[in-house]
Length: 501
Ligand code: MLC
Ligand code: AMP
Image 1: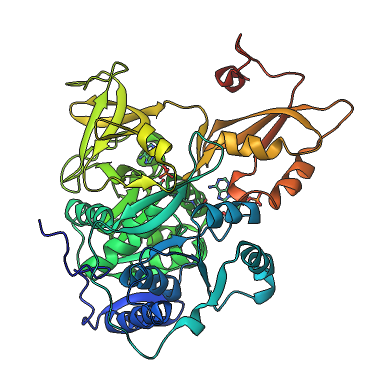
Image 2: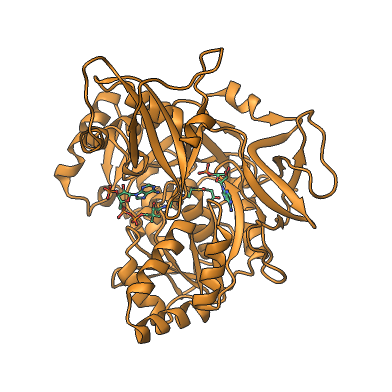
C-alpha cells in the first residue's frame, strides 16, 4: 500500500457536498462551509509554517462546529490533536497539558471568560500560548502539508491501572482503520442523521459518531451535553436514523419515558423504533436493559466492544443475530483472540481468556511512556485486560483482570488515581476505592476510608472537597468509614473482600 497518500484529514470526505454536515442549535453547516472553516483554522494555526510537525495542540471546547473545525484543522495542518475534558478539574488538565507537552491551547469563543481564568493562569505557568478560536481563523488559505499516514494524529487520555491517565496516541492510519471498519459493519449511509451528545475527549463520541458520520457524508446534530428533553423531542420528530449511547443513557431515557403520559411516550418510542440502528457500548449492557429497550421501542440494541487504544474491536452484526449480553464477533480488519494465562491462543468456545487485539486500528503508543507501551503488547498483540468467553463464536465479556479499573456511566476510572487524591485529604489515613454494581451507572465509585485519630468525615464534605480536585464523575457516590482495611499477608488491600461489604 502506498502510505504517503494525499492524507488530508479525511480523504474520503466529500467537501463539495452541499448537504448539511452539522447542526448546532438553530444553525446548519454544509460540508462546503465546514471545509472552509477547517481550512481557515488550519491556516491560522500554520501561520508561516508549512507543517505543524506533530505539535501537540490542545483544545477546550464543548461539542460545536468550532470543536469539529479545530480537530480536523489540526489534522489537516499536521499537528497532534489533544481534546481536553471540559468537565475536568484543574489538576487533571494540568496533568494532560504537561504530559502531552502541549504548546498551544485553543479555547471556544462562547465560553464565559471568567470561568476560563484558572485555565489561563495554568497555561501561563506552563508556558502554553492560549488562542481564541475566532482569532486563529485566517482569511488567507495556506497550502496544506502532504502527510504520511503513519504520522501521529491524536492523543486521548485514558485511565488505567496506574495512578495518572496515560496519553493514547493514534496515527492517521489507526483513525482511518477505526472509522472504515464501522462504516462497513454498521452499514453507514449518506442519508444518516445522528445526535452527538457524548463527551468529545473520548473515542465513542469522536470516532464512532462524529468521524464516521462525516466520512460517509451524513448529518450530525451537536449537543454540548446530554440534553435529554431536546433529544427526545427530536426523536419524536423523527430527526435521527441512528442513535449511539452508553448503557447509562438508555437507563436514563427509560426512566424518563416511564414518567411521560402514554401518548407522548408512544410517539418517542415510535421515533426510536423507526430508526435504522440503536447502538450501546463503552460498558456492559445488562440483558435486562436490552430486553426493556426492545419491549419499549421494538429496537434490538446492537452492542459492541471497544477501547481507547483500539477503537472498536468486536461488534454484534448489523445483519444477523444481535445477542443479548454478548458483544458479537471481531469487526472487519480487526484480529481478536482469547489468550490463556500461559499466553496460548484459546481455540473454540467456552474457555475464558484475555482479549488481545491486532490490526491497523490499534494505537501507536502511550505518549512519552515506552515502558507502558511495551508492557501492553505481547508478540504484536495489544493486551486489553478484559476477560471474555466465546459462545458459538460470539464474545461475551466476563470482566476485567484488574479490580482497579471502574466503569461508571461509560467513563473508565482508575481506582488508584482516586485513592491518590483522597489520600491528600487531611483527615484520611488510608483508603481503598472500588466499583460497586449499580443499575444506573454500571458501577458506582465507592470509597472505604480509615480516618486519622480524632477526625470525622461526612459524605457531603468529602464531595465538596473533591469538586475542585477531580472530574465530577470520579467523585465517590458512597463513603464508608472503617476501622481498618482488609489486607493480605503482603499488606495489599483485598478489594474483593471490600466488595462483599
Ligand atoms: C455524570 N455523573 C456521573 C457520571 N456522569 N457520575 C458517575 N458516572 C458518570 N459517568 C454525575 C454528575 O457528577 C452529577 O452528580 C450527576 O451525575 C448529574 O450530572 P449530569 O452531567 O447532569 O449527568 P448526565 O448529563 O446525565 O451524564 C450522564 C452521562 C455521562 C451518561 C450522559 O456520564 C456521559 O456522557 N457518559 C459517557 C462517557 C463516554 O462517552 N464514555 C466513552 C469512553 S470511550 P451530582 O452529584 O453533582 O448530581 C470507551 C470506548 C468504547 O469507553 O468502547 O466506547
Ligand atoms: P476506555 O478505556 O474508556 O476506552 O474503556 C474501554 C473499556 O470499556 C474496555 O476495556 C472494556 O472494559 C469496557 N467496554 C467497552 N465496551 C464494552 C462492552 N460492550 N461491554 C463491556 N465492557 C465494555
